[in-house]
Image (cartoon, rainbow, N blue to C red; front, side, top):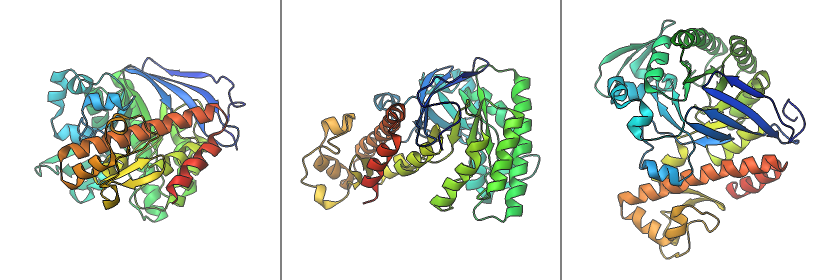
Length: 390
């Protein structure tokens, strides 16, 4: 079942796309499709597999830039739709781009806004030309085309930018899913044309595989995108209500058709369990709001599985949150104190919980990389999942 490209540990070729992106596949696990690589971007190198925290509005909720650096974050995600509406592209341009605006000197990936078309569907109308939508902030009317999505992301200045896509709702008939997928392919061609016309060497454009839960549509989408040619490829339209088995099957129907020497990104997926399952299937990049959202609700990831800090049993537990964790929270605060802060409604509880969960996800990816390089990823995965199945 191993990944194409050679025996585990053998050096793989480096694929280079201008100055914006290069990706080296450095190791694969002999027992599965898990792989470790190195992604070089204008604002730095990123080792893969990697977890990207979501900073939708140029900020990861409750986190400062320094917090993210302390957590070891190498790349984060922001969102074109939200930044376009607020603070607006003129403000970001005047600041010198999103990196300067945030004072963040590491890589950034931007979502084109396609998922917001899905999640805010009541305010949107999709046509082959683009999307007419009302702002969720003030009701103002806007129209975004695939070309606009590229122009906006170039203005934002992210290292990795995404094609504009239509995220198919679940459930959908095969006919609806096929129409949506083929519209996404047409938009991908328009996005690439616009990207090439702009002649930017500072952003790498990823195509997005769609097709809902239908394996043949996923395969068709992936093959067509590869024929068009992109520096990297994402799998979208998952984690939108389908079962876990259906989500994993969508990945399995997509990955075999994607080139081994390009990065693969599973969009909107990032619980510990799902990230490990994605890595098993050959995915390199992950993002998800779940770790930070869970943290704000008191649900924390630890080496012993999930922990609900709201639980009364932690009120007099003066041990560290996770004895196996080296994050600033676990080094400096007890479960009792964190439980008190959360139940008292103190704002700092949200910050500390979020910092821990981000650190956990970043370290989980790092441990997965080490396990892949050592040829023991399946055993590592089993050990982690045993803790989360309880």
